[in-house]
Image 1 (cartoon, protein in one colour):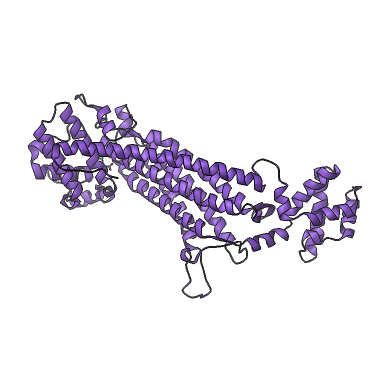
Image 2: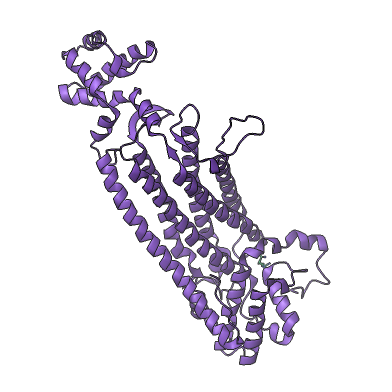
Amino acid sequence: MYRSRPKGPLHKDILDFLSSIGDDDEVFLYDLLGSQAHVLMLHDIGLLVHDETKAILTTLDQLKHQPELLDKQNAEDIHEAIESTLIKQIGMEIGGKMQIGRSRNDQVILDILMKVRDDANTICDSLVRIMQSLLEKADENVNTVMPLYTHLRQAQIGSYSHFMVSYVDSLFRDMERLYACYGRINRSPLGAGAVGGSRIMLDRVKTSKLLGFGSMIENSIDATSSRDVIIEYASNLALIMLTLSRMAEDFIIWSSDEFAFIEISDEYSSSSSSMPQKKNPDPLELLRGKSGQVLGDLFAMTSIIKSIPSGYSRDLQELKPCIWRIASTTNESLKVLTYVVKTITVNKGRMSEASNNSYALSFDIAELLSLKYGIAFRTAHKIMGLLVQRAAVRNKRPLRMVSKEDVHEVLEKTGCIVNAEEVLNDIKGMTPNLSISSRQSVGSPNPKQVQDRVKLLRARALKYNERISARKNSVHEAFQMLAQLVKKYSGNDVGGIN
Ligand code: ARG
C-alpha cells in the first residue's frame, strides 16, 4: 500500500523478511485506540467531516470486535494492515484520510508505550503480591532460626523471617525503580509524525489526554527516535529477574536432600523418567534459566539501538519481540515464585538442628567474650577459632561440647586471664535463639526488630497497591471516555481495552 515510488510489489521473500506482523498482535488493540484518538482529533480540528469520522470510527470499531476481518496479507505490519483493511472497506476517498498528520514512526512507539504502560502496572501488581506472600511467611517465622551463609558456608545464625524480609527489601527497590520510570513511559509521542512534525496544527494535547497519557514527548525527533525509556523499563525487569533468580537458587539449595530446610510443594515439583524417588525443583530452575534469557534480550535491545542514527530506522522493529518476551517472562516468573513461596513447607526442626550444631555461633560468642571480659575482638576471634579447630578434628562436634581443658588451654595460649569455667558456660549457654535475640544492630534478625519491619513493609505494600490501582484506573477511565466519544459517532459501543 505504501509503494508510491518503488515500482511493483515487494518481493515475496523480502516481505516475509521485513514484516513485523507476527509480532504485532500484542499491539493490535493499542493501534486501534491510537487511531481512534487521532481520528477524533482530526475531526475536532476540522480535517474530517462528521460522516467521514463516523465511517472510519465504525470500521475501526468493527475490527476491534471482529479481528478476523483484518486483512494481514501483504502487510508489512499492523499499521499497514489496519489502514489497508479500512480503505478496502470504506474506500480510498474516506479511508485514505485517516493517516494525515501521522506516520508509522510515531504510531509504532505510541503502541509500544501503551503496551509497556499496561505491562508495567501488571508487573508492579505482581510484585506487590509476591511481597505480601513473603511477608506472610516472615510473620509466621520470626523465631525460626536458620544458619546464614557467606561463600555458601555457615556464617551467622539468622531467621527464616529475616531472610524473607531481605527479599522484600530487595523487591521493593525493584518495584520502586519500575514505579518511578512509569512517569517517563506515560508520555505520548503521537503527533510527532515521521520525524519532523506536520504543517497541520495537530492537537497533540488532545490525543495525549484521550489515550490517558500524563504528558507528551515534545520534540518530534526525540519522540520517534529515542528508545531509552524502553531500555530503562527492560533493565528494571531484568533487575527483577536477577532478584527472582537469587531467590530461586536459595530455594533450590534449601530444598536439597542435604539441607532439607524447606520442602517445595508437590504441585510445583517435577519428577524423573528413570529415578522414582525424584522430586525436582524444575520451575525454579527454569526461572533461573529464563532470567538468563531476559538478560540476553536486554543485551540484544541495547545492541540493536547502538549505532543507529537519529530518526526512525527499521532496526528498531527488532526491539518488539524482546520487549514482549521480557515482560511476559518477568510476570510469569513472579507468579510462579509467588505460588512457590506460599506453598513452601518450612522445616523448622531441621533448621534449628543445623543452627544448634553450627560453628556459626562462634561469632556471637566472640562478641560476647569481647564485651563481657574486655578482651580485644581480635583475641576473642582467635580463642573461638582455636576452639572450633579442636572441635572440628573431633568428629565435627558442636561448640557446646568443647571441654573445660580445651578452653583452659586456648585461653592460656592466647594470653587471656579469664576464668575458663565461666567462658565454658558462655559457650554452652549460647543457643541459636539467644544468638538472634541478642542481636541489637538495626536490620539484624532480632525477632522484635523483624516483627516491626514486617508491619512497616506490609503497610508500604498496601500503599503501593493503592497507587498502582489509581494508575490503572486513570488509563481505564481514559479508554472508557474514548469509547464513549467513539460511540457518539459510530453509534456502537466500542469499549475500552481493559
Ligand atoms: N513495523 C515497523 C516497526 O515495528 C513500523 C514502523 C515502520 N516505519 C517505517 N518507516 N518503515 O518498527
